[in-house]
Image 1 (tube, rainbow over the protein chains, first blue to last red):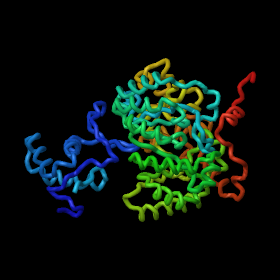
Image 2: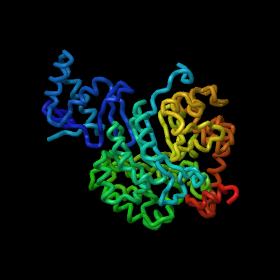
Image 3: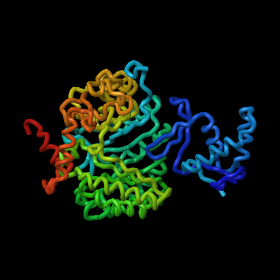
Image 4: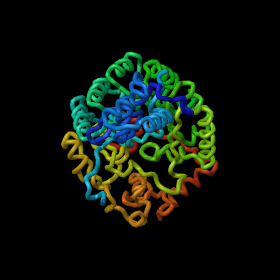
Length: 94
Length: 377
């Protein structure tokens, strides 16, 4: 568990103040919030769209590794989720 | 790459000024002072066409504004259409006209967020500044916004007459449960320009307000985000207004006039298209009005050779026009402008006792008609 109380068993979910959607005109996922928008890079979009409040970080990581035929993503995913929690993009389901 | 020859990106931010009708009469309103002579409004079908065409180009953030957008009884229909198209929908409102039936209908239609304006923290001052009795009503609306679980942005326009109440304003926002607070210092366009001497604060007022905001932010932490928009008259460099005209923002005025910024209607000689005569695609990419201030070819010195032109785009065209009479000049807020003295003189006048003694000119149709008499009436 890191300093924010986040570990592989945490279940992140998009904070209710944000909405994520695919924008073809920007060729990117975006996070929308009151009068603002964050354009997400490819990996951020792939992680965030799996944060449904049900899947654990371990399950999200496993799914990403399967989908993209990658390995050892757990540190990257944990780091991104921690950043997203700090920015209030994600909340943690108990 | 030269921005003048490259194709601009999409109009990501669409602002629909549905109507100039408004139950408030705020003296700092940015609406055009001649609004009373603009008496046509697009109908529901025309607004829906605007929504569809703009969304197809990639517009995604959508503001419903005015005037008071709740003055339109088809607001719920327009929100529903916008939501179905995939816009993130923001309602920018005084709260007047927002009863429980309407807020429930707006929630059902898919409205994402409500920005509620207050004029001050006290009933007496709020009601004086808006020239209406609306404080109690706004407080009730704030409770409805929470009840229906909308994220709430509280917007308070700051100026000489209310900026000293900043602690009370922030406490009120916290009490009402706002997630975001915008403390927007008055920008001097439209009605605010008419009332500049009465509304421009002193430097000491601004610095004290910034300090109090900083302290409040420390105590409130993550619960409430506070944005303090610094009044540009007190800066040395201009704001990157609209991120450059024609780069991100598209405003449609009540009569269908398309604007690269909500104040641009005042710029003389700017050939502004109307959605009744042209598609959004043509307006955004090909119309002379939207290309006029793209790129750098229009710039004069000191902007033309300035390394900061890529960051601030020479500041605000409307401010350059209002202060110097020429929209292609540098924004006089910039201390490199030969006209910077016009700004520092105004600030110096605001330091004098009795600077703001003349009465406010409130935004209403009567005052608008008096400023711009119709010939033959």
